[in-house]
Length: 443
Picture 1 (tube, rainbow, N blue to C red):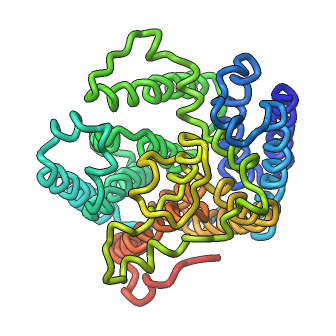
Picture 2: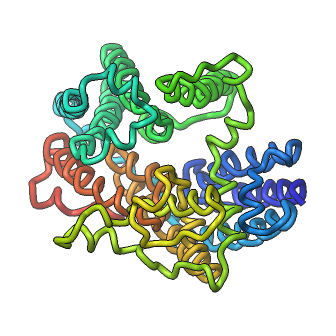
């Protein structure tokens, strides 16, 4: 069954990519097909050769065999992909990307704004470090990184580091100066170091993907030849090492030592980059009786305005209930307070959120809506191809946006900063008036 699952999704993702009318490799349908192929197929392929590596606790709590579990997952995931593609097709873009004339952009202002964004983001990071006791304290307590970042709203300014790099790409496009390339390299290394210092790979990988997408549109279109394939191979190998090394660094403060064989552990790699096992759990555990039907979904928001004891506020991240169900082999459901569930989360993402709340109808509705959002974000990107904010927003939406409470909360915090950055960009770099810069150019 697992082999069939792998073949089926290989065919499905391949056809989705090849049959997409928009041949732009970063168009939503093609981008999603690549994303799913990397994240899902790697996990399923590994299970084909190592079926015993699948978490037994998931099978026990769901009361299914491995074959039954993947049959159900295959059915639900297929429906999810079809719904997602349908949602993207509704708002598909037929026009070519709009590239404004470069003379509209002030080189000096672009460079100054890049440096200002970088300084503000760096100051925010340094303030955070001073509050917790310094960089060494952070590195020595990476296993407790979630608690260290709790309530640190100053970290919401870190995306400015990414925007500063994107602005430098625009500087390179305008004048192609060696000095800008050197500054970009320095900014890139520092930004990657800042995100890596939190012991998490997601933000660092998204940062790299944003740069790749931006290079394709701003500097020059990516082409597949011998030179680019060599670069792609080097980048892939570097990312492979990065994905493996970060967990080792993160757990080093607990006294864990890793040998070379432990570090290059394929099982850890596929489980680290893929949430497929969580989707398999969701597809097999929930039914009409155990579904949540949005119970507790809005409780974290309403509880913030209550005068009662804040310790009873449920977790915003409902993935803690998934993890608790599997660990303790019994039912946990929102809105249990945070003290009664595990501190570790299994991210629900769109699949887990949709199926745990409304089963198949939820999957159809929320994946269709997610597809709408993907295409709208792509339209926004194409409407102003040199705006750095749109690159960051588009990649974030493709890789992180869904309707789970955690992701919605994250985007609510992020959108005001991105909108303000876009307004500043239009005023300072493009010379627009304040009033016109408030309007989104959405053609």
